[in-house]
Length: 256
Image (tube, rainbow, N blue to C red; front, side, top):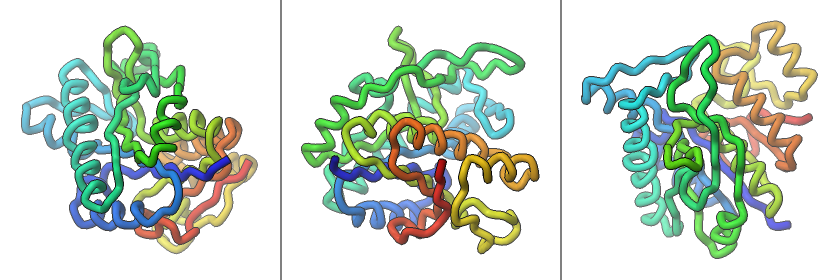
């Protein structure tokens, strides 16, 4: 099968002009088929504030009420997504901006209410990457925003790390997929205060140890859980690295 690289990039990097410019330049130099999945949380929070809508977060995850859903749909699917697409076109990359609703790529269910009501947040249930893979083979580069739909006409806010993992798993039926999570650090750190304490490889056994020692916490936990699930569902490799190190084969490699 042909190789495909799926890059997931956090909101902070796509929301600042200089880091976005560098990221997209590095992304344009990746050889072969590629896909970009992006966040955009800070932009959504900023616009919500300007519109007088309070942003509520629990453990780094956004509570998405009806008004917030309108904001994230505008920001993720519109402002951030189309800004990236336009900049990739300027670099000679024929990009296409999509949400999970477009081409029915990612269908989800509204998260059930347990201790916390997350509102209009989707948990992915179905991935259909067949149309997406045929577009990719035509030389089109998908740029995917962190939004899905429920098949009943409703958009749902969905975690961008999960979007990347689920899309990678769907595409693994058609390509040899490398999933690369890019963020501000050089990889998963053994010491959060030491940017050079990168753990080069993390296996499932290592992950259990890192969790029990509280070395891995917060947003890194779902990122690693997504990474292991992706490998189990056919993704060839998963790397967590710094955005500016893209294509340099550095960072933390995840193994089963």
